[in-house]
Length: 146
Image 1 (cartoon, rainbow, N blue to C red):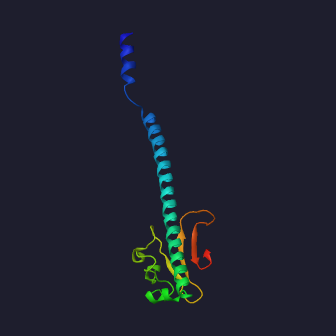
Image 2 (cartoon, rainbow, N blue to C red):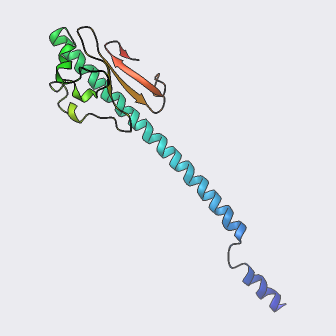
Image 3 (cartoon, rainbow, N blue to C red):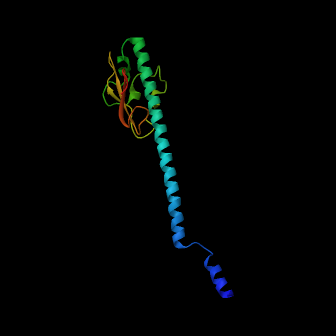
């Protein structure tokens, strides 16, 4: 009887391989879910910054238009070609840090309509839906967010 008790006691000193595998799978699922949620929140934060940046750009263009009755003066700074980065536009009187304005992720803020007397357009990307804007390419212009 004593030998049987000792063998049961010795057998229960650790985890079995199956128990260890189950714990690893549970921990992996918990950590995977955590990192997924964390990445999702980071994407939302980057999108919020993109929208804030585009609101600043729109306000700068509107201020420029209020002063000159034209958006064309912004093109004097170097954004006189479709496809260039918006930080080349002459908006530093309104956005002093325009030279450092950049997308917080891997996209760019690109001039898609050269500023002229009647309008301008800057394109940007959203990683996820944000408010009524779906994920993907969008633009800001004199008509607002599109």
